[in-house]
Length: 263
Image 1 (cartoon, rainbow, N blue to C red):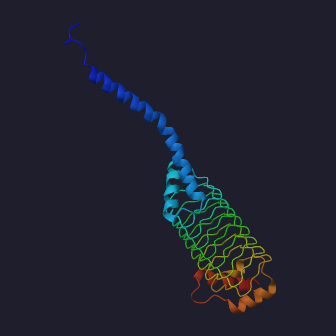
Image 2 (cartoon, rainbow, N blue to C red; image 1 turned 180 degrees about the vertical axis):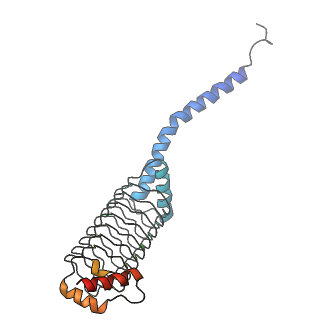
Image 3 (cartoon, one colour; image 1 turned 90 degrees about the vertical axis):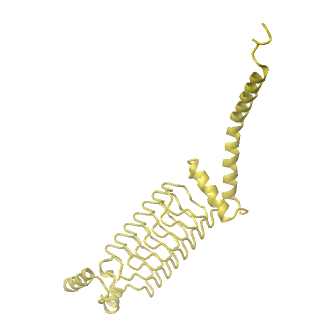
């Protein structure tokens, strides 16, 4: 073979180098992915990370289809508007976090700390919130329908226009909570601490207050007479102090008159 007809050595050498580099990158990609995942878990389970680092780590974990963060430290994270449906956050810490409009329906958040968090318009339908701590959190317009909130801490929460229909709040601690305009029909507050709680204009149809502490509780313009578990002494007192005013809905005022006639 003449020199002119032999294939060039340089192109063959370059092709070989390219193949070697591609093979090396393929071998390296999986360990790198695993290392990144481990790094993100480290960020949400240690106190050294700041809020921004934790938030970014959670977002990357979500992209990897990971939503099990039992016992994680997620203090101050911003997860507003995300779909965390059925996420497992039990025993986690999310104090001062932003979860505005976040979907957590069906999630596991028992014993989770969400103190001073912003949960406006969040969706917790059917979630497990047993022994959760929501101290001083903003729950305005959040949906807690059919949630399990047994032994939950809701001291000083703001829950205006929130929906707790059918929720179990038995043995919960709600000192100075604000449930103004909330939907509470069929909810259970059995043996709950409701001292100084505000129920202004709340729908209390079939709400159970069996054994609950109702000290200085404010039922102004709500339909308290349609609740159950309130003793006769308190009912007589409420009739004098909490008769519906002109600020109550017309439906509540009409129903109060019907109740008085049926007594």
